[in-house]
Image (tube, rainbow, N blue to C red; front, side):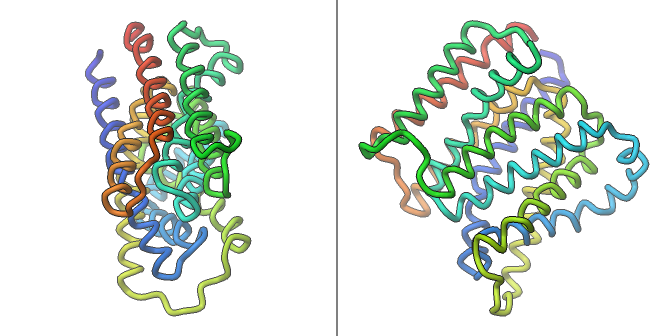
Length: 290
């Protein structure tokens, strides 16, 4: 594995670990009165403010950038906005696991849209991932389909993120900081469009600590972490990105169980394990080709 690939791999793993705690500030903002998409809007607007100087300095590069690259990055922001909003409408671990079916969607996209070679283990991984999804969603004896707007948002976010990372990998040469700005811009647009339909406009005054939480979350998660992720994403196979980000699954599920009392039922744990094992199966053929 080359030095650059190794650094990109480490960055994606660390990003996944940081995002494993992302649900905490989202829930804090919701409890402070910024429910629905309003909290995500506050976070992503804060990220735009933090990243605006870098985007301004790179404005000529952004004007020359491939439209496909810009759309792909903005689509990634839209996906993460859906993911972020979903935490207000579902259990943390289930939202994360539904999002992290991304390796399955990435394999299908790269195979049938781009015509890339698909190793046998990746085909097996698709079956494991979809099987894990069915087990997880049918744990309470119901049909294995997402229930509630939060779960549907997470599932849609994973599919959109797969499309976005594929586009970024094939077309993007934008520097990390301005790419993160475009990413946050896509999330802001999505949040603005969804917020009015999900919850009423907050009427109570926003406390100062809420503003600090929004600014800090925008700077750390949507600013620094996303800029690093943008750098790494264009240097890695789209499926590997989805797999390496799975550190978020373990940390998110553990933190939600400890801090929010959202433990998974036995069958949900089995389904989640199958989703994670699907990712493990997919990483091996990628490593063999590097």
